[in-house]
Image (tube, rainbow, N blue to C red):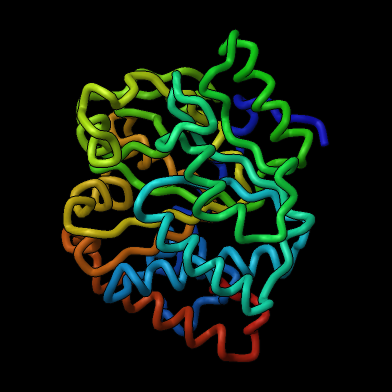
Length: 312
């Protein structure tokens, strides 16, 4: 498949945004159960609010397993950190129960610390092997994690983008959310058109991640990360956030203006984003009750005559 240049991609994204806005205006006066189901998902990001982080992990694991079940050759974009960890544990349970086969699945991780070898206990290569890959029937040759020891990062980052394109692009991208609104290691002020590259980590990010190291001094200052533009090219995006510390970033991402100061706000421009939150992470949302009502409608539609369209 030929690669679409990012300027054309941006044009497409803004067209989707304009169409979405037109649909919202056109259906504002309609009761939710009168809106055609294919249009319902265009009204907003799908925001799912669940009572606990455990339920967030379970729901997300089902979402990913369903993707692989429907398309065994899926290309998954994967994330690391404490929030995805719970999802991976639930995903392993589903795999052991025989719910999906990932022998033909390909994965690309979002990022990696610069200076850490794949065998370092805090590298994301190590994290993925120990917390997911070794429990699945996945071909490790199909599992890609950025190289934190690359000799020429400029050319390496170009090649990482090319590998994603050769694989057919990412079908489902899993994301966490930083307390300052970053996604992957795209720190505040990152270009919304950015590609895979080196990125200097903010002090806040290093402080947030210091709990995984013996001291703050050991936390790397650089990372190689997929860019926001790279992430927006995924066909579907699943973002998870748990805990009250994420509430401000969640609100800015969903209800705030699109801004490089909140990199995750760029997801408002994507046509297929699902956000799964626990109650504390959803605590600052102004339209929380609306999102809960929309989800009730969505669940009802999935049980109705058009249930072939499922988000779970």
